Image (cartoon, rainbow, N blue to C red; front, side, top):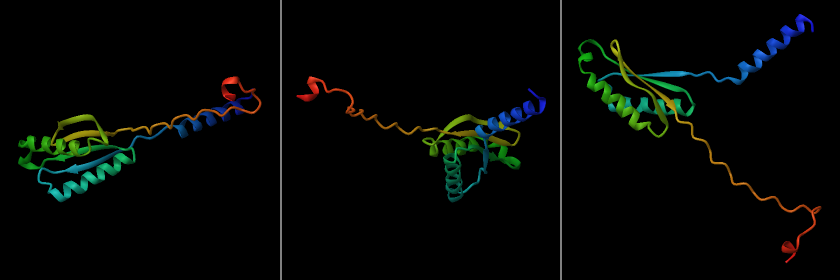
Length: 135
């Protein structure tokens, strides 16, 4: 085999492998301890939309200044988000502090559609009928 043909086939194989893989996208939604109810609902709707598109979502609670002392508020915000999107998401990584931010990662819950029941095959005219089928 000549080397040019080998390189061509190798490139073709790599291209096919790349086409089959799915890129994992992580969308980030930021909250603050003083985020109001309407803004909170609006951001939760965005999270649900991202999960329906099968993207992962990183929920971030940002603290500024002395807010970092009140970590319990951040945990409550993340727990409320998880509770609202619980039927559509799996918690991949729970709430954790990293510097002045608190993070949690949610992954979409994959729900497979139920398979329709198989229909029995009708008897083909080529097979002879048995006595049970005739009666």
